[in-house]
Each structure stands twice: as C-alpha cells, then as structure tokens.
Image (cartoon, rainbow, N blue to C red):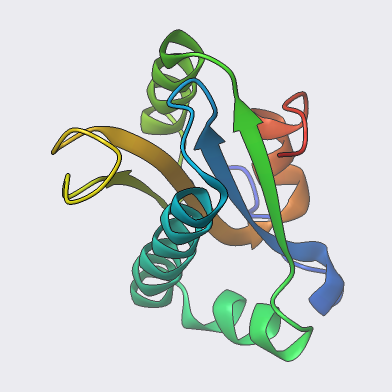
Length: 128
C-alpha cells in the first residue's frame, strides 16, 4: 500500500521558496530579478503539475520566502536533493547581459507546495 499523499489542512499550509546564490555578489536589483524569475518559472511548472495546490496558494496570498546559500557547493547540494524529491522546482540560469556570465545558475524556485515538504529541504537555510 502506497503512503497517503499529504494535503493542505488550509490554504496557509502552502508556500513557495526561492533560494538565491550569494557567492555571486549580485547587486540588489539583479538579485531581485533572479528571485522573480525563479518565482514565476516555478509557479508555472507547479501550475502544470497540481492546479489545486497552486489555486490554494494564490487564494491565501501567495506566500513566498527568499532564502540564500553562500556557496556554489551549497547550491549544488540543494539541487541534488531536490532532484531526488517529488517537489517542483526550477533552476534559473542568467542570460549574461549584465553582471553574471551567461549560463550561470543564480537561483532556484521551489513550489508552491506544502510547507513541511519544502522545509524538509530548505528549513535550515538562512533568510536572504
């Protein structure tokens, strides 16, 4: 018998997390743009997977938390963990038109999904 999938008790049990690389020393505007890209792309992917969760998230105000990793190694470790999860996530690669070299991975958008599912992977990360 497969384990029962957890569901949100109410709309506030859902959030989206954006994780930004601080080792790249991006300016505030660049960081904001990369976080926005991660939020939007992860939202789109999540909408394709589970419209009900996304609708609940939007209804509750679309809670987003922005966290950071301080090294490329931490970023890679998080990506590896997420690849082995069932969470929807999106890795953002910069176009290289301003501060960052083309193709540099700058941020990860995760969810929206249940808070406890996301926190299992990001709960120890500090706020941006």
